[in-house]
Every structure is written in structure tokens, then in C-alpha cells.
Image (cartoon, rainbow, N blue to C red; front, side):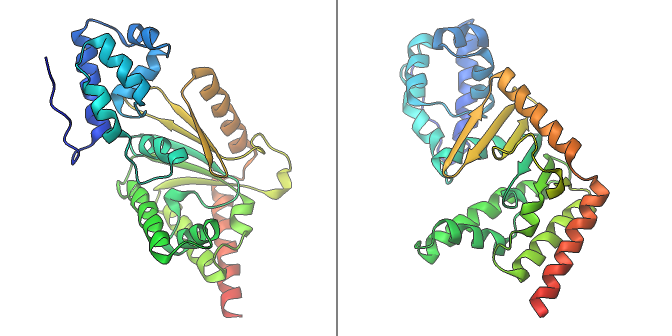
Length: 278
């Protein structure tokens, strides 16, 4: 039976996932069985259905053929793939929005979810020194929209390990840094986030290779995201996710306690405030 296209004003990825679940169950197939036909894991199918993974066109065409859905998924996967984020981060950002728990190690800059407007603007201007002001402001707006996730008092649970370099690197100048670190301290003191600082004196550590973001969901298997300059990889393979989770656990073991971390963040913020008025 022919299906209507999805309403683009709604949440296309979530709706596409819901339609996939209905079509799969109508065909009498399990997630594992459909995954086997697509040469992916059953967990991957679960993530498509939960809306935490993007359905690419090659999968959509195969799904239409396997489930007999008259081209529905191929027609609609383009709408579900639309994103206001860069290609390398889009899938992770959209998964982040559905996560119930996020654990993140930040080696260089403040994580996007807890950046202030001025800090985000300085970061984007550094990334794109020749971009127009309109382009930069659109990027800042999208980053602040991501941070709206924290407007919920409890979900997602956000646990950040900040390398001491995040505190010491003067992004945007002393005033911007003082505001940024005070913002982080306020989130900690209001019990909205958990944060630890990994101090320089720990030397080599388990994630010297770069950042890690771990995401957990109520209705889908966990994901791990690692990012470099203009690149990012999202992993759902259980062994890979488990390995990154161990890396994160080792980071928290090497980091300062939550109390000592807060004290250091507040102290460095005061140093920046003093520099601002010196």
C-alpha cells in the first residue's frame, strides 16, 4: 500500500524511525533479521527506529525492497537527513538531543553544551576567520540551541571531564573566560552537571588521542563519538563503545574530585577576572 510522505515540519528522523518499526513488525521481522539482510547489526536497526541514527539513501532503498514499502523510505530519508550542523557532527548532535545520559571528555575547549554565547562566538571566529558575521551568528545560535537541552532540570545527565588546558587556554580574552568558567561553576553548584578537571600533573592519560562523547538512551543501545578537526566518527559496535567507556572511566579516576575540580574552576575564573581589570 502506498504511503504518504512525512510532514517536514515535524521531527522527520523520529517519524521515519517509527514508520520503520511499524513496517518491520508488519513484515514479521526482528531487528536482527532486518539487520542481517542489510549487513548491519540489529542494534543499528534499533537506533534507526529510535531516531538516534541517520538513515542513508542506500539503506533506505534496500529497506523499501525488503519490506515492500513502495519507495517510502527512499523518498523521505533526505528530509530526515537535513541538519543545521556540519556533516561530520550532525548525526552525533541529533543523537545527543535524544540521550538520557552524556559523558564527555574535552581536551582543548569547553564542551558545546556548556559554552557561553561569547565563548562560542570566539571559538567559531577562530575556526572561520574569514566568515561573515551572519555566518558566525548562525553558528552561535545553533550552538546555544543545543545547550537548551540543559533547561530540563535532570535529563540528560551530563558528566564532563575537562582537561586543565580547557581552563588555561584563553579563548576570547580574560573577560570571556571568567564568564565561561563562572557559568560552568554555576551549573555544578546547581547540581545540573557533574564536572571534573584532569590536571596537567597527571601527565599522559587514557585519552591523549582526543575527545570522547558517550551517549546512553532509554530505547536504543549506547553510542560513542570521537572527533577531530573537521572530522567525527559515531560508533555503535558494542566492543568499541565498551572500550571508549573504559577510557572515560580511567579519565575520571585520574581527574580531581568534584569538590577540588570546582575549587580550581572558581580559582581560575577569579584569576581571569583579575586579569580583566588589571
